[in-house]
Amino acid sequence: AEGHYRKALEIQPRSSGIHSFLGLYFSQRHRPAEAAMSMQTSLELDPLSPFVHAMAGLTLFALRNYEEAMQRTSRALELQPNFVVALWPRPLAACSLSQWEESFEIGRKLAVLTRRSAQFLGLMAMAYGMAGQRDKALTIRQELLERQQLGEYITPTAFLAVDLGLDDM
Image 1 (cartoon, one colour):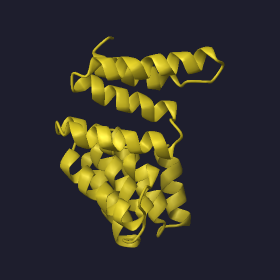
Image 2 (image 1 turned 180 degrees about the horizontal axis):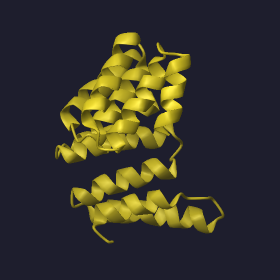
Image 3 (image 1 turned 90 degrees about the vertical axis):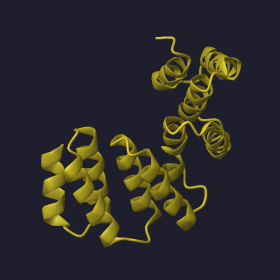
């Protein structure tokens, strides 16, 4: 994948989007210096882009820099309220900071904005489970199972998130 990103940058060196994705790629490959450099470049190229700030938040979350991830995604939400890409890492970052109520609030917001997307319900259940609210997490798991039994595709990562939160691996 890295070669493809590099080739894309040869063609479009001023693309904040490519730099953003490359930063996230580096963060997932445990290359924090390169991730930070790509993230900073994307922010310099397009400082008013909610997408760039949201991707920076995802990158910082992947680097386990939860405070900065919350700050960067907050900036994205200032620029575009209810931007799902910016909201996505926030419940997990809030959990990592033991900010349970913040995590629950964002989880509920994501559930509404995405029409109860299984992926985001799984994250909300994970937060409930991590906070010791097993009943709420189990209620969400039951909803996901019922939807699956009715023929809806429920991504396995939604169930994985629930189980991680409940420590039921």
